[in-house]
Length: 168
Image (cartoon, rainbow, N blue to C red; front, side, top):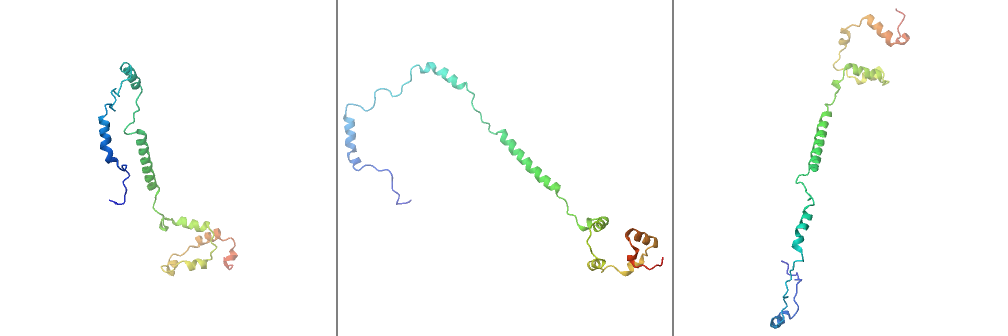
């Protein structure tokens, strides 16, 4: 306890010295300080009009507050359902990532045909590794002459570009 705290309640100086004398003076007087009339009095015609005033107060509908309000329960249930739908929707939209192996060869070929990279065959050869490829692989399957002529007819517009001599 803090000893420096002051008590806010004080009695006047000399109060208890003269207290007994003041008390004896009041008790010795013949006049009583207590009123002889009853301080509590019932108003006139109170009990005659009591029933009517009580019925008037009871006719009003009391306000009833439910212990479990439906609005709050419904809002909590709706928010839980919304969170569950968002969580499930997030998992539905997630898919495995596509890799290079998932692409079809035709898609890769179509990409290179539709996009012009302006690369020369020498630049492409510098990028592609030749480690697992042997020259004998190219020679093992000979190209038929008809297929070669069809390819050249479709893809080459000027035969002079090929530097072919007149051996036809």
